[in-house]
Image: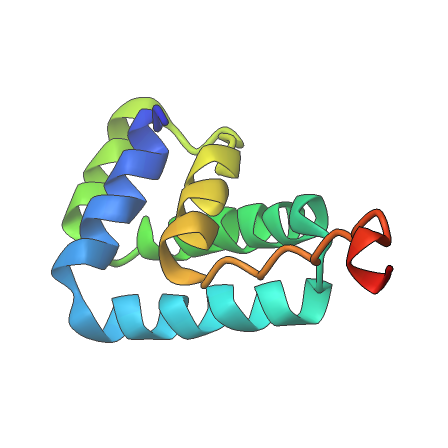
Length: 106
């Protein structure tokens, strides 16, 4: 999965900041639970939250602030990052067992 520069910046920051990573791990897991099997909805919600987070960090954290100064703060997709975090931090749900042909009932 390929991340854009903004997504990579957030990911690297979360990897280096334990408290931030714990916060986001819990947030990703809660969003996943709240959305149930709707992966697309979970991605949509997280993408919006990640962009808001990027904007907030760009006012106070050097790498984000410098990027905002040079690249601006035009809305950038955080979809790939949202998908990656869901895959990394949420246990896969067990797939429902397929019902057999009934042969075992004979």
